[in-house]
Image (cartoon, rainbow, N blue to C red):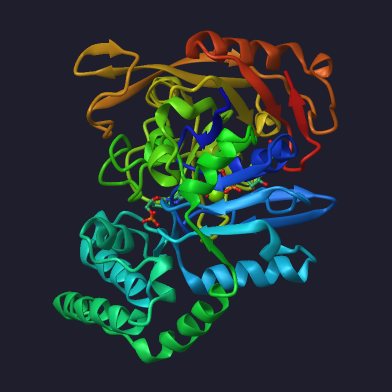
Length: 422
Ligand code: GDP
Ligand code: IMO
Ligand code: MG
């Protein structure tokens, strides 16, 4: 039976999903985003071009692959328009290759204001949101107040919009939040006009028909498993299900139609925003990883927090996603180090554990490390598995053994070509 594959991040996002989706796209007919919104920043590099996508799937540069924005995604028309304009300027025929779910929810200007108001009210406990309006939009979705792409075509769209904005104004007044909505609305409605030119479909039918027809489908996740609304480090998470099950909800794919689950992880860890990070290196080693790895957010430009690979967290993510295949990113960044630490366990209430407990707050868990040999050589021009240094092969084997899942790709640079099949 033909099934859809899922590709997702196993850490706190920014694992390199965009790069790998672009690398894998030639194998697929359809690439479909299933959750998140413009909080994501997925970077692709090829032919000397670096491009960051936020809402549009990372298969868009392929000449024929169809890219689907699923019902689980939230769309900011203004950001979407900018993304499309940039692609069109690069000669990409976006309209011919992009389908948008009528069930996807719209991010209103007031959702962004509410995101900012909510963060401001949290003070030092703020989530570190990307301030793209993600939380408030998903709140309206589950609160059954949201506006969807399909509503744009209805005669009472403006009334629906006004009713939701009225509610938002009351919430903003509750937060004592100052704003100027009149400054934001023209660009939003203008972008809605542009959005209307694109193709809206019932993507659940489209995807299921495609599965029946034997088409190859790859569902592209955003964020990472440790930012999942249920299984992440709540409340320091995003507002959607980033895990594999999110692909079922966010595209209408039945669980028995999920094929391979490809889990992407960095050879170390990063996190942007607030929340616990057990293996964080708040020192010169962490700073070195940040500088060498250029660990600055693709969406907000914020410095990413850095740390060693966390195996209990990785194993947890593998389990809840049913990962069948791993891909390790940014191996080249660790070339700078003589030795590499890996967190194998946590000390939790006097006991050594190798799983993720309810809380991973600093007082709750202390990472236990094992030191491994570094490879200390430039990987970035290598092209085959046979050329990889022995110490890197050992690092990969060590992770495969702990994870119980094979690593099929090791990435050695941001470019499409810097990809080693194992
Ligand atoms: P995503 O959100 O998972 O798509 O990841 P981001 O694009 O936010 O962040 C990953 C960053 O690492 C981007 O700047 C990529 O160009 C870059 N990148 C991806 N893979 C590699 C790699 O193997 N080595 C290096 N040096 N950079 C990489
Ligand atoms: P990609 O798809 C890394 C983080 C934010 C914040 C938290 C909540 O590029 O991997 P939100 O804006 O969703 O309310 O923010 O989640 N976050 C990400 N971190 N990569 C992302 O996406 C992220 N999307 C959200 O920094 O801590
Ligand atoms: Mg990113």
